[in-house]
Image 1: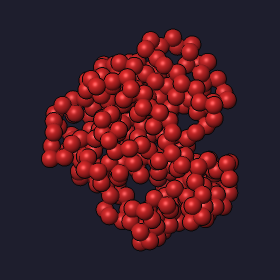
Image 2 (image 1 turned 135 degrees about the vertical axis):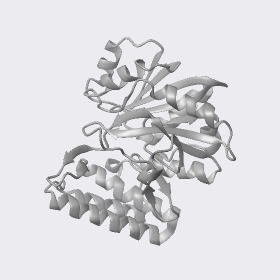
Image 3 (image 1 turned 60 degrees about the vertical axis):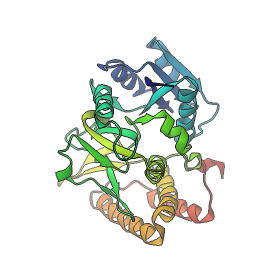
Image 4 (image 1 turned 60 degrees about the horizontal axis):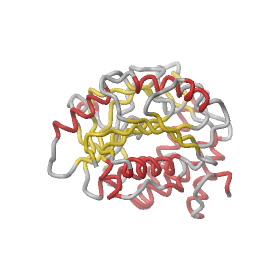
Length: 305
């Protein structure tokens, strides 16, 4: 395995509106990945037609017969990276844009950090909202009961040890991914990354936020309220996976207390959305259905059960 070789993994599912911009940002890097592997989760739009029209060199396209979820795509990317001898796996959602020197900054951090007391497993860029770039989607610390955002006073450090961040834009060591095992596939979507990052942490690996590396990403549809608060709205079905996977994840990671904290935080979020008149119709029903399935031990894609 060549520790300097980088495989860029791009995940798509009906990403025709954004995938071109994502790929162009990757191809505009000051340091380029050695290969791009695009795994498409059974898109029904023109995603693949747009990708092929770009005539990207060193691009491999893998078409899945059904939407198997992000965890499965992540694991296929790990298998491909290991089999082809890559040292790093750089993961992207179809709607993430990386700024020009993002990869260079991540690699610089990897070299500067060297081998601290525990081996480095992953490096994460600064994630900013696409719609409101002044808003930073801060990474997380795990306090034993809950994920909490890194405090603003810590954010001035160039490299900061964290416990989790969004996976898109993250640079992972392939040998670490292989040793730690794969992402949880039956979560399908949502909490897949946080679950895995805590798995890396518990296995003795460190993860760092690399502030100079920057991506633009949207957690949903970003809306600014009258009082200036930024809220991210999802399609109602996403709240099913949030309710199910986070209930299960918090119960596994921190017990009943963690689940109660999560539910309390979710209710506070509901009140903020309702106050702003932005709460998605049927979201509560989807969320509660997910919570119920968590206790029924029903996982995988929602339309399969």
